Image 1 (tube, rainbow, N blue to C red):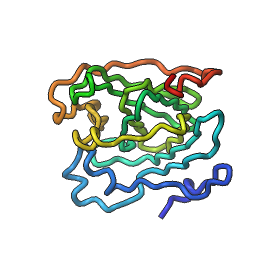
Image 2: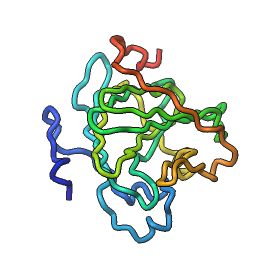
Image 3: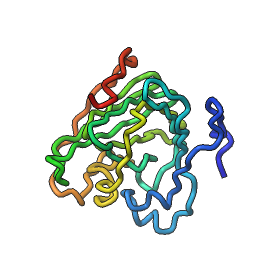
Length: 204
């Protein structure tokens, strides 16, 4: 059942797409916990709230809940072709984790995280797989994104490797051993406002 504080209508978009725990078990760090956990609603995706100049605006709501020893997160995906994405925090705090594969191989070339608060902006560059983490045990994260309407989400690599190359847990960052050797995680600061021109999201 959707939590009361999540029952929100965004410009007529009444029913969100819901990601359940069973959709996520393969990409979690604490798989032992996941074996016996109930199939609860993990986060909510309000897609296509508005569209402008070929771009789509979505909102994702991630309640605070530990997934065993790991903080709540989205499933993680890559984008088709050369499309990027822009995120802005509407409520709470977020960590956006991004990784780039080397020459379409599984080997990771680069990985970094952006820690963002309300009003902060993070840009996902083309060719980077990514996910959103709610690092709070108490506060719901509400984050919006702009992306090209033609951009498709690709989950294959993330699913095959059981998540991105790092997990964010109660003990901090832990490497995903399914990738083998990965680069040291680095951190970048968020932008403080949305760029006026979003044409770069079209992959041009």
